Length: 137
Length: 438
Image (cartoon, rainbow over all chains, first blue to last red; front, side, top):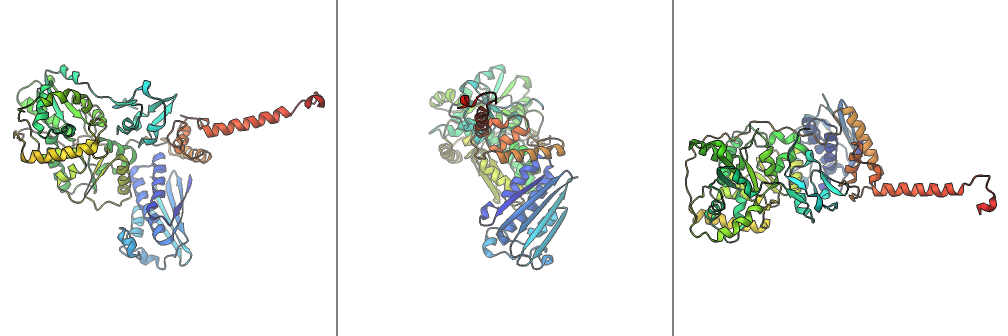
C-alpha cells in the first residue's frame, strides 16, 4: 500500500494534515494504537520540519504487513552537519518559529526515539530526505 | 458484536432522509438508506449533535418517563447541577430540590455533591504522578467513547474515576443501606441534560454495572417541575453541594474545582477532536489536565436541556454566587460511607474503523478504497447517503454500497449507455437497404 501526500510549505497551520490522514489510514488497517502513536509523533515532527525549514515537500508512505515506512523529501536548504542536528536541543529555528512553540531542538531526536529505524540524507542547497521505519510485530 | 444500547435513536416517521445529520456526525455514524437515516450503532458515541441539527426533530434520546419511578417504593432523584440553571430567577437550589420531592421523589441527592467527592479522588490521582500527561477527564461520557473509537492510543490518559452521576447513585444507596433499607426497594433516578448519560447508565464505562436505575430527561421533568417551583415559599433545606460542585455544569468547572492551573478546557466535539489530535501528536505532554466536553458550554449545553446554553451559564453564575452567600445548607456525615470511586474495569479500544481483521486483506481493501475515491467527484454532496465521498468509497469496499449510489457516477454511466445506444442504432444490418437507412 503506497500513499503520497503533498506538504504545502506556505501554510504553517496546515502542517500535520498529512500525519492526520496517515493516522486514519493506519487505523483502518487495524494497526495497534501504540504503533500509530509512535508513527504519528515522528511523522508530525518531520512534517513540521519540512514546513519550517524547507518550504514543504512530499511524503511517501508505504505500508506492508511487517512495517510502516515513511519517506519525507524536500528541496530545502539541506542540513550541513547531520550529527550535530541530531543532538537534543540543537536548533536553527528562527525566533518567530520558536514563538509558535516549535524549534526546541527535539524534532530529529524525537523522530529517532519513536521509530525503529531513521535515516537522514541531505545535501546543502539541494534538500533533505528523512526516512522513518516502524516495524509491526 | 454484542448487543449495545444507544440512547440516540431515530423516529422513522419524522425522518425525511436529508443530509443534515450525516454531515455533522463526528464519527460518521449515520447513513441514509431507503430514504431514512440509519445509525451505525457501534460507531455512535451518543453526542446528540444529530438531535440538535435535525430540522424534522426525527432524532430522539431514549430516556425513562417520569412515571417509571412508581416501580420503586423509595424514589431518589439525583439531579445534575445543570438542572439548577434551567429556571429564570430561581437562585436558591433548595427550591428546586424541594420541588423534586413535591413531584414524587422521597429523597434527593445532588450530583453536584458527588462532583466534589470525585474532585477529591481525582486530585489524589493527579498528584500521585502515576498517570501519563496530559490526564484527560472522564466526566463527559461522549469524549471517553470518542477516544475508544478515534483515539485509542489515548485510553491510558483517561482519568479512571467514576462520574459524579455514578458516585451520587452509589453514595445514596450506601447511605440508605446503612439506615437499614432494602436495596431492592430503592430506585435512583438521574435527571439528565445528556443522552450519553442514559447510555452510560445501561452500558457503563469503567465498571460492570451502574447503580443508576433510570435516567429522566431534563426536558421531560421541566414541565412537571416548573409550576411546582412557583408555589414553594418555604423550601426545605436539602442542599449539600457548594458552588464548586455546581460549577461542574459549565465548561471549566471541573478544572476550577480541581484547582489545576496548567489545564485546557475545551468544549464542542469538533474542538475536542482538534485538541485530542494534538495530544496524539505528542504536543501537549506539558499540560497536566484536559477537560473535554462534547457540548458547547459544557453540560449546560446538553441536548436534553431546556434553556439556551449561554443563558443557562448566566443563571448558573448567579446561582453559584447566591449559593456561596445566602443559601442554607445541611452537612451530612458521609465519612462512614465507603464508596470506591475508581474504575474496576479497563476501557478497551473499539476498532470500528478497521477494514478487515486480516491486515493483508485490509491493505487490499484500502488500495481499492483509494482507487474508488479517485473516481468519485470528491464534492461530498451526501446524495448517496454517506457523509463524504471517502466514506462512500469505504462503504463500497465494505460491500455496504455500490458506486452507482453516487448520482454523478450513475449519470456518467447512463450517458455512456445512451451513447452506445445511439451508436448501436446507427449500425443497421446489411440486409436492410440504404434507402431505409435514411
